[in-house]
Image (cartoon, rainbow, N blue to C red; front, side, top):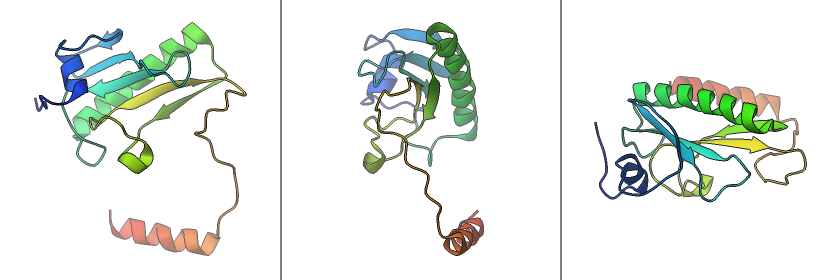
Length: 139
């Protein structure tokens, strides 16, 4: 399995850095975020090191999403939040601070003022259609 000796998340998986582990299986590791956006904020990572969504293997991303669903259900049962975000960021502009693919399990409360949501404003349907065609061409 690919690991990076300089990656903080790889070090957490290896037990070299302590964490508040909440789940571990053969492919994934889940732990509490020590800089939580809200109470119950957890992270789910694959044990395989991959920098981002572009480089993570299909098996690792699948396992990570399955574990994120399990953790989300446990957080929901524990905290009964008003909502929950599953968030995955890629690159500095998207606020990825650790370059190891990971998903945030982020409980939400009405009025928490966490700035992840954007307003709903109708887009230009012609431009959206043209962009969809360009994206399909790259699949």
